[in-house]
Length: 123
Image 1 (cartoon, helix red, strand yellow):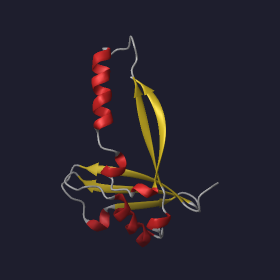
Image 2 (tube, one colour; image 1 turned 90 degrees about the vertical axis):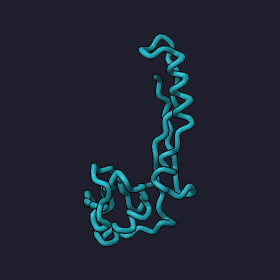
Image 3 (tube, rainbow, N blue to C red; image 1 turned 120 degrees about the vertical axis):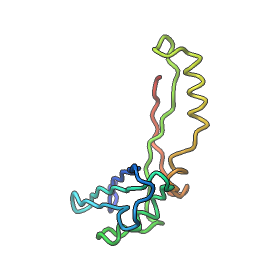
């Protein structure tokens, strides 16, 4: 199944405190149904991706927030015996990674619209 519209979104945190509202979004049309959207935020701002994507309408890409799905990558860390890092450090790192916040929360994505794709990563 191919979605009606596919948008690859990149979020850039810039070395300025705030980005003016009209400069948050840059839309590039790649094909009839495929777009690249770049979102710019300052380091003092909390990235709100759904709100920023509403600005895409001014550039010809209308999005319905209740019809938008967000696909995120998620990694599960696995310890590696005999790796470059001692096993006890790997376990501490894995514990800290599990306790960290999620990308969906950080970017203020609606939980009922998020699909997470997972991978296992050996340390």
